[in-house]
View (cartoon, rainbow, N blue to C red):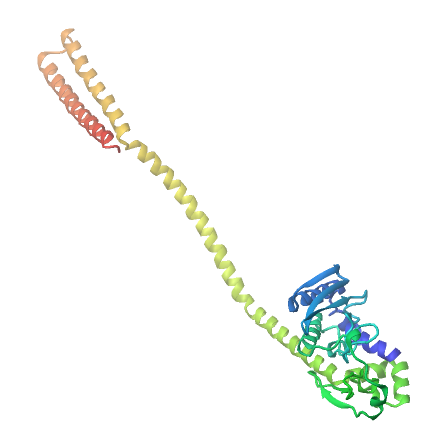
Length: 343
């Protein structure tokens, strides 16, 4: 028993520090198994969260229920499946209704999918509806002594025995799969496995499916290493592109500041050359020219300038006044027309 305990711990936890480093938390693994139950099966009912679930199947036109019990050690320990009502089937314990000999239960490991196990059991009952225990008709006992067993191969290749009276005989221990190869070992070898940890680990390492898992693990590690090397090779390119992006971002910021400065100048110029501002400037210029012509007339009347000087200055100031007044009137007309046109 001790060697089997070590075997289980080896598969579930690995050997040494490298094995322990790959352990996935029990809670996450348990949740993943429950998720597979809901993915591969319909009508999954939660009786008790994370502990008990119920799945219904059709069996020969009648509904059966499979109760899935997940112990505290699940998924390190196999789940318990109980069918109700109890069926006469080589997978089912005729007394308790527990499904004990289904391939998924017999070959259960921590890497099995709970959903697929329950799905396979349900499909077996749907395709080959067994009788219910309370509906089976007992065959006279003397027929059993003369009946020769016939063999039938189930879906996973295991040979199961069926007697000619139609009642199924449960698999005996001699027919159970020997995945560890312990049946071919001598008593001394078994005792050594139970006492010598080094010999036990060496024995486990030579098992075919362990070697297969190790090979798959090595392939995964090789792929991860190759991916890491590829990522490192691209690091320089990534750094160059990152520096280029930072340079472009800095240039964009500088251009944005320049645009802001130019835009402010543009706004000021736009205000300076707006029609309303030009109109105000023209009005000021007209008023200034008019004032100058009045000043010239006042100096002449006061006797501060002669006729020639007065005429020359007065004519120039009135000419300037007239031109500016004409421009102002023209601009006022244009602005009025624009306002009427709803601009």
